[in-house]
Image (tube, rainbow, N blue to C red):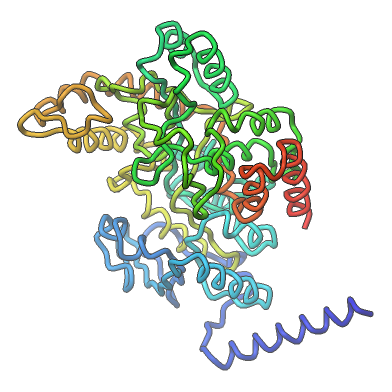
Length: 484
């Protein structure tokens, strides 16, 4: 009886929403299943009877990428023989407003109202929307067009975002993570690291423990350097969320936080970050550090996740960290995360929507300064462009060193072509090897893991619960969320 009452209330609410929508706006007489009807060819000029409706973040509409495309995205976009008539909605900037937007979107979709064709939101924000069947499978859209085929993209990146074999989120750029070792460590540790093809957090902890026991003079070195916003580095919360990525399988809806490796990670957390006593805010940064500020030279390792690919695969006598290798998860997949991502609603004009998205990663798009393009054919020129830009940042006309953190030797503008020519082939080869590895997508790029586990994390880092208790609480929390 109670169930029937709830169903009736939901039906009435949906009916009211539909009625108000019909009164408040004029809608196109569009088929409920547009993608099943004849679609316009992707070659030549694509006609449109109505605007392509897109909800996009502000930085795409008015920022760098809009400037790269050389268009006013608020009005129209022309290129490749395709005429886009755009109806743009700017997504709110604050997380609170984005949450309200997502709630409205979910209610509208449940009521059969589709206000957009394209959504420029992260997979973590749209995971439930995808699960409920409101998003198109982009793999099918790629297969039915003539612009690109699947082999034209880094398929391991796309595969890592699939849900049950379907691709609902298309990233136009991504990052992978590499780790370097402190060049000032004893030679035997540098030699061991140089022979490794990849490294995970548990191997890093093993190296730290051996270093502290065999060389007490290095006892003030920590696994990672720096925890501050201004100096960069690795925050405890970021590393916690990164490790959690190993224990959630979204395709099977299973979690395994009681794995011995997760418990070992939690038990060693104090060795990684000298467990903070409290946190000022949601960033997870320490408000008081028992042993004072940790400088860059006090890190045994560093992780390149927020720097350019170029810094990971080229070298100009870095004074601190050398021998960058892939930073991987427990099963050998290299950690990766994504930036701009697009989803297509089920009843959109698929060809028109896909043509619009492909403009964002076109071969001639040189604006991918830090992230890497998803399209395979362009990675070498973008990679070289990144390195050239990095060198220009560090270089100066008089030979003074502007960026001592990154480079030991002074660089001048005239040195740059020679450095590029000498290293580009070997660097591209190393990059290609790394990009061929399996991918472990940072969990926060896929689901909103932060909101799910932060209270447990907070209890743990403040010594309220033990490692085993934290693991069990995480297991129960995530398992319940997965089966909802």
